[in-house]
Every structure is written in C-alpha cells, then in structure tokens.
Amino acid sequence: MTAQTQPSDASLTRMRNYVERYRQKSGTSPHPNPDVTDAVVFGLASNVDEFGRPLCPCNYYPDKQAEVDASRRWFCACDEMKGYKYCHCLLLVTREGEPI
Ligand code: SF4
Image (cartoon, rainbow, N blue to C red):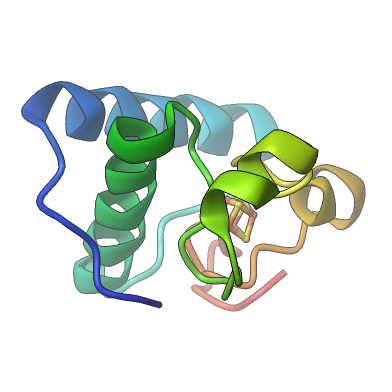
C-alpha cells in the first residue's frame, strides 16, 4: 500500500458503512485484526477524497487518475471480489479470518 493522506471523516464514515453493508450482502467477515480493516478503509477513504472513487488501496497504479478514468474494475468491491469472492486486501475474509 502506498502512503495516503488523512481522509475526511465523511469519507471514512461512508467507507465503513459501505464495508459493513457489503459484508452482510456477501456473507464475508471482518479480519480478526482490526488494524487490517482500519488500514484498508483508510486507504479507500483517501482515494474517495482524492479521486471521487473507492479505488482499491492495495494495488500499485503507475497513474491513479488514469486507472480511475480507465475502468471501474478496482473500485471496491472490485471485479475479483464480485466474481470470485477474493479480496486480496483481506478486508473481507471468511468467518475464520482466512482469505476467501
Ligand atoms: Fe475492495 Fe477488492 Fe480491494 Fe478487497 S481487493 S478492498 S474487495 S477493492
């Protein structure tokens, strides 16, 4: 994950609420270490503030704006999550806290 600026409270709240709703919808669970969730939500919220979209914070993008403009595939929940229930950020895991 790259360094992120401190996100706004509004974006943090928006992303926390989104993640909670998406977990319920997808039958996934939070990571047992809350620091993992906090770091990913922080990154998502920073990207919402900077780019207006919840770009996945766990990837490297040579040009984030270009990625945002190119497609929605890495907007949370990303295509991998929607298609395979796989979250490489470990934001969404099994009840046992394992990757899906
Ligand atoms: Fe969201 Fe996908 Fe990133 Fe997981 S891997 S945090 S589902 S965008």
